[in-house]
Length: 193
Image (cartoon, rainbow, N blue to C red; front, top):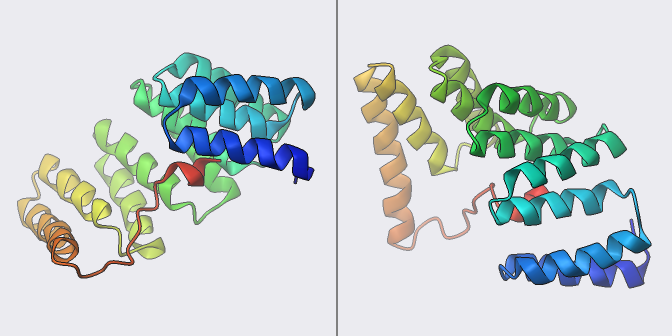
């Protein structure tokens, strides 16, 4: 995707982000953007840096630039939706998460966040549909069962809430006792770049 000299710089920036050295990452990224202006991938990374510092409105501007530069980049729409979600603008979040899913219909994180937006707006049937899709994509993520438990609890379907909370707890107990060591969360920063 990039020449080696640029790829090394990107790797440095990603390492700084993973080390939570956001100021340094931002400074390095600004230098790289001067060399490679209007690059959707760099704009997306910039949005991630800003969002990680709770500079959500600035992040939104960079994610919008990301999708303007590459309208088929599902992660850009996902990041826009997730950032709108963080500031409580659930309808905007839903719009962009749906666009992400339209490009990548197996985007677990997008379905997860879309379901959570619907849950927060008390659109329980839509939320349940999204969470069910998550289970089809990755039944081994305990967080989906927690969210289903919350959904059913809020919808006063207590038997289903208990069932899903128990599944969530079983996953966590297995992990606590050394079982299921290979299970990884699917919502890591690296999936956003």
